[in-house]
Image (cartoon, rainbow, N blue to C red):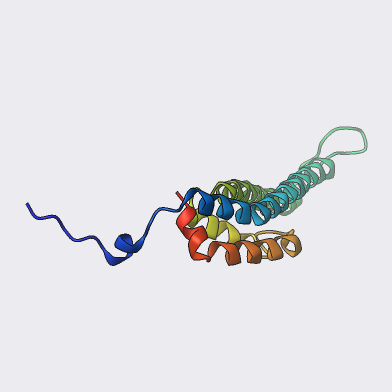
Length: 154
């Protein structure tokens, strides 16, 4: 049986040396921590937003006597509040995704996930703390595109 030749990229790819991997991990630490802080700030922001929407929804139905009213003209307001809470919940999950991606970035575990995380943290609608996420995302991309850092991912 003949052995198939290795692809050119795999033939030239060599595993990183221990000191090279350590240097890559050190270079990834700064942007990863910055992205984690941004993601945590997003989580707090979205949890607070969800709470405010739900409190507003409950308070808008309360009457002065302590009971609750529900009229059909309130349906649009209710649907709008539920829709807004659902959007905030989706953004909350995205923020958790960014946090997990930054954790993988810091450990040099998943190159694809690290790249996606670095890009998503810079997108303003996806990360309201984008003014903070933008420099960390750019920093992460610059570090991730270095060949020695790319080789260090497992």
